[in-house]
Image (cartoon, rainbow, N blue to C red; front, side, top):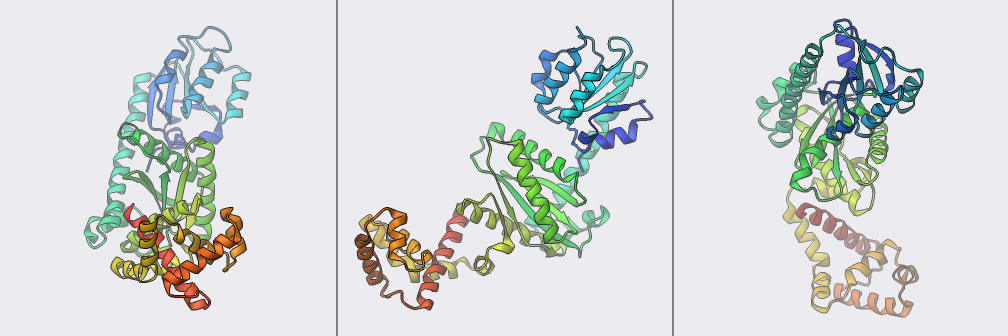
Length: 392
């Protein structure tokens, strides 16, 4: 699991005589690394989630520290340790007030503490935590990709507090845009850290890993009701943190047993794509109705045949004659067979829609009057959506 600022502070505050002066609310944030910075102009090199240490060597006036903290916060640093004594004697009250306002953690450490000692200690802890996280991610990835090879994940999960017969639920987070190779690693790292920072404040056991262009969250031992609440907090947190980046969330079902984690993952990915098609940022497997039945069909050819048997002829006609009869039919079915509603939604004259519906009925050899006929064509559209998503 990633190291939080709270972990570092709690474990070493006596050893390094650390004192938290402001920003207690920021203690749950994850620390990615530790840097020594003395110049405001060099804060642009921060990538985010770093803990900064300074002696105040570049201090010029009583507002220098506040401006320094403002710059660090802008670059998404998680906290600052001030080595007081030589250049900074005490922290101004207005600086403490500012830190509380922006929820930025500010610590002081006496001058006699050697910077190299605390930096080496913190960096070692971060590296060790990252190695544990790598092992945990590998175990869960094996559970997702190779569920039949139980020896590749069950021993590790059991040794680290995960019940093999416990409940699991996968939440898939997907940035809704193409990620160029140069930014992939950094962006996914930021998304993962954001998720961890949000979940660290909640009473839940979880794991996080990056896979392809997605962040995968594994919830352990929680009900779907609680996961709905946690998922909404994640959605709102991401929306606030990444205003210019739309992120999509797909939540699979709660499954029993580590050997069924892959099912929650596959269905989480599937409902994410369904949500995207429906222009919904977050979608739960439990809410997709009849699509559950379609997703449960493992033989894709059965679905393909069912779609072609019902809508294949109409699709082929559209391709050959450059018509949009599939779109018109779908609207007609979703509007409860109301020609007027279809006309209004397509900004088309009612008589034109009547003609097109008549032609569609001829091509399908169905008058679309019975509930059974309308259902099978609507089901074919659902199948089409799932098949298209599987190909993309």
